[in-house]
Image 1 (cartoon, rainbow, N blue to C red):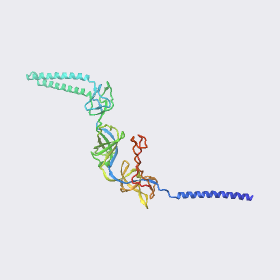
Image 2 (image 1 turned 180 degrees about the vertical axis):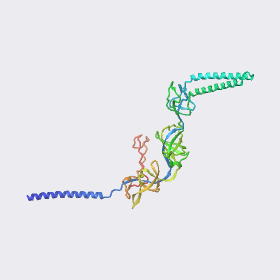
Image 3 (image 1 turned 90 degrees about the horizontal axis):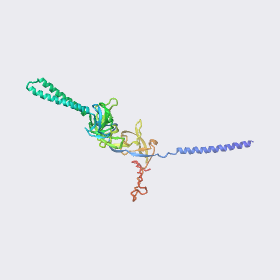
Length: 392
C-alpha cells in the first residue's frame, strides 16, 4: 500500500516538474522577445523650402448684381401685350409690357381739343385787346386756361407713357410673374431684371486687417458651381466704419463677368491678395503637429551616423493650400518628418522611406499606345517621392 502511494507521488512530481520547466522556457522566450530592441520605424521626410510667398486674406462672401430690380408698374391697368420672354437679355429702354390705355387715349383727345379751344380764345381776345374791346383781365384769364389745358395734356401723356413698361437698364430677365389680361395694381412685380456684367462680391474682414487693404487691391474668387474657374477682380469700396457686433469691416470687390458664370446670390470663397514676400520658409501641412501648447515638428538629425528625430517647437504663419509658412524654429534645408509622427519619441532612431524611382518610359507601339497596355487604357502616374528622402 505504501509503495503504491509513493509511485503516485513520484508520477505527480514528474508531471509538475515538466509543466514548470515548460512554463519557465515560455517566460524566458517572452522576456527575450520584449527585451529585444524594436526596429526603427520607417517615416517620410520633407525639406524646409525657401520660396516666394503670396499671402492672402481669406473670407467668404456673396455675389451681388451691380444693378438689380424687380420691374413693376407705376400706374394701374390691364395687361394688353407682353413683349418679353422669361430669361431673355434686354437693352435699356426696350419695351417689356403694354397696359391697356384706350380710355386714356380718349381723354387725351378731349384735353387736346380743350387746349386748341383755349388757344383760339386767347388769340381772339388778344386782338380785341388792341381795340380796347376786352380788358386785360379777360386776356389773362384765357391765357391761364391755355396753360392749364396744356398741363393736363402733358399729365395725361405721362400717364399713357407709364403704361408702357420699359427695361431701366441692360440686363437679363428672370421668370415672368404676370399674365396677359391680368389687372395690375400700382407696384405689382412683373419680372426680375439684373445686370450680370460686371458683378460685385461682398464680404467682410476682421478689423485688424483694415490697414492691409485698400481700393484697387486684387481679389480672387472661387464658386462651387465652377470649381476649376478662378475669377480675378479688385476692391471697389470699403465701408468707413467697423460693425460693432462683429468687429469686422465690409468690403466690396468688382468682377468682370463676360461669360455670365457668376450669378447674384452665389456663395463665394474670397482671397484678397497681399504683396508678395520673398524668402519665406514653408512646410507641408501634414508635417506639423498642431495643439493647444504650440505647433511642433520632428526634426531629422544625424547622430553617430544614424538618423534620429528631435521634437522642435515652431511658430507657423499663414496657410496656402497644403503649405504652411514657418516664422521661426527652422531654417532652410532642414528635414522634418512628414508622415509617421505618431509612432515617434525624442531621440528615436528612424528609417527614412526611399523615394519611388520613376517608371521607365515604355516604347510606343505601332498604334501609338504603350507596349503591353491595351489601346486607350489609362496609365498610372508614378508616385512622387518626398523631397530630401534617403534610401534605407
